[in-house]
Length: 212
Image 1 (cartoon, rainbow, N blue to C red):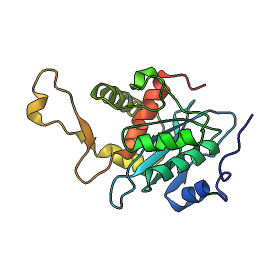
Image 2: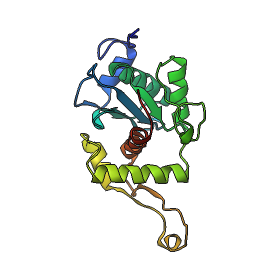
Image 3: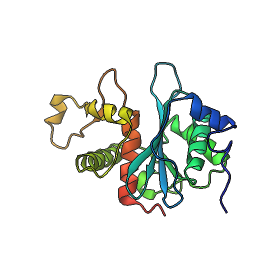
Image 4: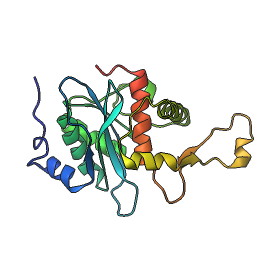
């Protein structure tokens, strides 16, 4: 049966307060006719550091329907992901699990979140989340670039759009001249790429995996 989310939708529990206290943007409420994917990228919650981001995507249209973006400790961010996922009909949750993302995923598992995605292609056979390698990141970058260029994915967040504009090639030019040298991309100096990571994870999953 349908489980009740911690603290309700946006009223009353610790998870709900987190959603209101931090930058929470919602463009479309949950619709029982559709399925949703939540992708996350966690940071340490240090003032002035990277942001923790959770994006919710409608799996049919690939539209970004909600976003939480703020700085909070990873275990607390796990509570927020739980609350946001429950708001969207227990959305499938998939996130980057290198430290501190592993803390977020462990928190979701301890809360027995019912819909954590595990796909062998994500370098974690039998375990939820993805572990980024050069090969996986290259595929994610290619998928996201194509989806954005073809307007297959519908972005609503000004943060996501702004970070795409400063997501650049970081590989030194001398290395780019070497045959087979990997192209490394990331945020240019002084910028962030946290929402780009959640976008790349979403497009990769929506393109390749069944979310039913």
